[in-house]
Image (cartoon, rainbow, N blue to C red):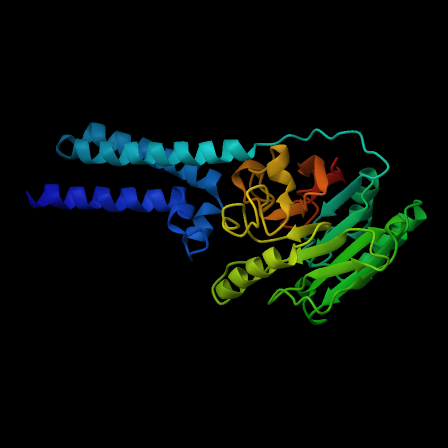
Length: 337
């Protein structure tokens, strides 16, 4: 009798834990420590569940007295794997199609360079190949960004450069934004606030006609920074407000973590909607480059307010050997309507 009660208790606890990990939004736990880390790697969690299903199935076949117990756990893991796969499939496993760019189209490149590691020539070449108008480069110094801009100018595409650095000791505490000279001049908004640990650059157009550009770097949800991570996401949601905003960079958060931070049902974070979700790329991981893209965490994003329509987006997967632990992404926006 005791064994049956214990087995039933274990099954209930496992079922509850798997439910929380599969859909933490139901309990409001998408930003809870531990849960946030597991849900950021849904595909990897589903793969681990499949491996455990095989083990439990073998145990059920070999251990007759405990067959029902192991079989029940295996069924729970099957459901867990299916739920995660279903969630990922609704977000999209990759669609790299782009509409033909028009005169008013803006192309955005976001790449955490891990402290200038890929080299300026690599970044400039990628930007030039894709006719990029805005580069959001977390963990990128001003000197590196100026070198990228010089290479692009030499190729006939002059760019403005702005860098915010919290110090000159760690390159991770610098974020740079480059934008095409065609957009005109911009000024850093120093009144809007800031992400807590790593810098975010908020640029307002001097003539008021272009989009507000936000180069994002939220801190990772690691011990000692967890509350700052939550505060960063709240601040980013508040900062993406208005009618004309484009924001991109390293959010250190997936779509799950942003649940509840949208201002409407058609947006993702504040007034901004995620380009990956809109184009069927929401399940393609941008970190780490050491794992296959479909097993990684989609924590880098490009977003825009509803005056922009996403006309293409892709996670760049041929730069995994460039040195950064993040994959770059390219998103294309055209004026809505």
